Image (cartoon, rainbow, N blue to C red):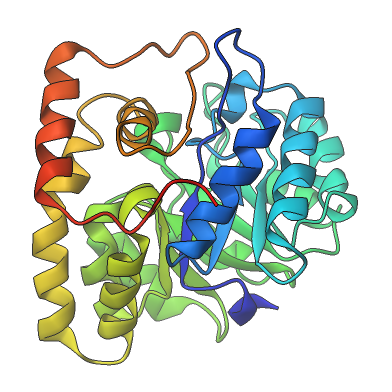
Length: 299
């Protein structure tokens, strides 16, 4: 199953309507547009999908909506964990019936467990589902880095099949890639790290910029994986200014604005997130004008 998840995944936003409710028709339209624009698959209700602002019931309904929209063959990963192990278990278990192919499990935020706590947390969640599980290390959001040694311990759990690594620490990245068992995959969790990570042996990316330029990211990732490094590096350098613009403010604020700007219905944000400042809007518009968009009006 692992290799079927795909190299190029976008962590899709969750559209809300003007009243703040989940816009389920827009969810389906966006999912179809993202697959049509070059993504292998999608991560649904992750950080970019504003999972902390969704109820469990909303998350499950978003999963069902995306599965119905893209059909049975597109790989889908459900973001299904919180910072409480017991609270996460019902979501993890719900992924199967909601049509997810894999589960993404994020390092717990705020309570800052020790590394042994991470091992027990993730092992407990993985043992609660028959689905493959992808760990997510994002210390910029959780205030806690999962050490390479911890990741390698967890890589021995049979259905923990990979990691979305967003530490930005290339010494750590190399340690994981060098020590992981065969078949344990690494997806970049930072768009600006993707190309160099794949050169080192990373598998792919779980992207934000893939909302807009998935086909170009696909060319970059597959180019790097297949040894066409000059080609991949050119695309990497070309996309970096757009990537930077999408992170001027907290994700997904800029990318939702960008999608709406190019005519793809991404809707509003839920508090505590708010619309981007005028300066951010101007910077994003400037970059959008410089780049060819792969995504089109939702199909």
